[in-house]
Amino acid sequence: MLRLATASLAGTAVEFYDFFVYGTAAALVLGPLFFPTFSPLAGTLAAFGTFGAGFLARPLGSVLFGHIGDRRGRRPVLLVSLLLTGTATVAVGCLPTYGSIGTAAPVLLLVLRFLQGLGLGGEWGGAVLLTTEHAPAGRRVLWSSFPQVGPSLGFLLANGVMLGLSATLSDAQFASWGWRIPFWAAGVLAGAGLWLRRSLSESPLFLEIDDHARVPLAEVVRDHWRLVLLTAGALAVGYAVFYTVTTWSLAYATERLGVSRTVMLVCVMATVLVQGLLTPLLALAGDRYGRRPLCLAGCAGVTLWMFPMVALLSTGVPLLIFLGFLGAMASFITMFAVIAAYLPELYEPRVRCTGAAVGYNLGGVLGGALTPVVATALAEHGGRVPWGVGAYLTGLALLSLGCFALLPETRPLPVAAVAEPAPG
Image (cartoon, rainbow, N blue to C red; front, top):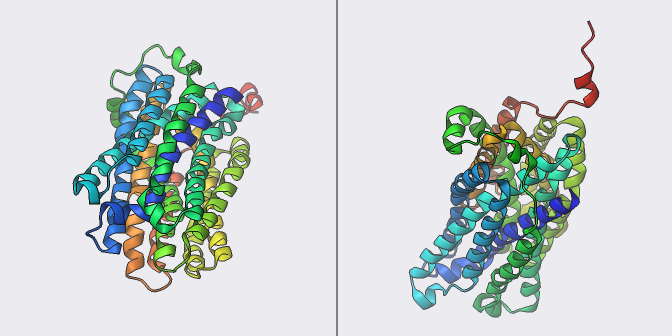
C-alpha cells in the first residue's frame, strides 16, 4: 500500500504541477505576452480565459480516460494521462509569443491548455481508484488521501520554482525567458512519474468484475445522472476557494493592492503547505467519523469565512492575508481530504472510473474554470474590499452545502456491527 500510494501521490503531484504552473503564469505574465493588444485588465481576463479552457477539457478527459479505466483497467489511465499532460506543458514553455507569430500564439496556447486539462481529467480518477480499490475498508480514506496530497505538493513545486525565478531575475528577464523554465521542468518531472508508475499492479476489484460496461458513460448518464449532478455541485465550492486563493488573489494583490509578487507567492505557498500537512489528519477523521460529516463541516466553514477572507486580503498586510487564506484552505481541505474515497464509494465498480471522474471534473468546471474570471470582473467594479467576490463564494458554498446534504454516507460499517445481529 505504501509503494502504491506513494506512486499515486508522485503522479498527481507532477500532473497538478503542470496545471498549477500555468495558473500562476496566467496571473503574473501570460496576459502581456500573449494578449499585448488588450488593456491590462482585458489581458488578465484573456489569460484566465485560457486557464479556464483546461477545466472545460477535464470532463472530456474524464469521459475518455474513464472509458479506458472501466473497460481496460485503472493502470493504463495513469500512464497515458501523465504522458499527455507532461508533453503539453513542455510545449507551452517552447511556444513563441504574440510578438513572434501574432494571433497564432494565443490560439496555440489555448490548444495546449486544453490538452493539459484533457490529461488531468483522466489522472485523478485513475490515481484515486487504484489506491482506493487496493486499500482496506477501515483505512480507505487515509490511503486515498495520498493522491490528494499530490495537488498541494505540485502547487508548492510550481510556485517554488516561480518564487525562485521571481527573486533572482529582473522583471524584464522573467518576462523574456524566465517564465518558460517551470514549463520545461515538467518534462523531467513527468519522466520521473512514469518511472515510479511503471510497475504498479492493477486494481484487484477491477479484476474481479465479470461484466464490464460496454459504454460506461451511457450507463452513468442513464442510471446515475442525479448522482453526477449532486457530486459536481457539491465539489464546486472547493475548486472555487482553491483557485480564488492560489490564482485570482495573485493577480488582484499585485495589480490592485501593490503587494509584491514574491510576498504573495510566499503567503499562498505557506497556506498550501499547511493544507498538505492537514490532509492525512483529516483523512483519519473521515475513516473514523464518516465522509459526509466532514464535507458538511468544510462547506459550513467556507460559508462563514469568505467575507472575512476578502476583508483580510484587502488590507495588503502579509500576515493578515495569510490568515485569511489559511481559514479558507482549512475549510476546503476538510472536504477534499475525504473526497478520493467518498466519490468512488458512491458509484458501482463497473462504471466507477467514469462516474467519479466526471462528477469530480464537472465540479471543476462549475467552481474552478470561471472563478478567476468572475472574481476579476467583480473586484474591478467594487471598492478596495471586493465584497462581491465574498458574496459569490458564499453563494457557491450554500449550493455545495445543499448538494452534500442530499448525498448518502458511504463509510463501511465496523466488522462487529456487520457480524452481530441487531437486538430484538
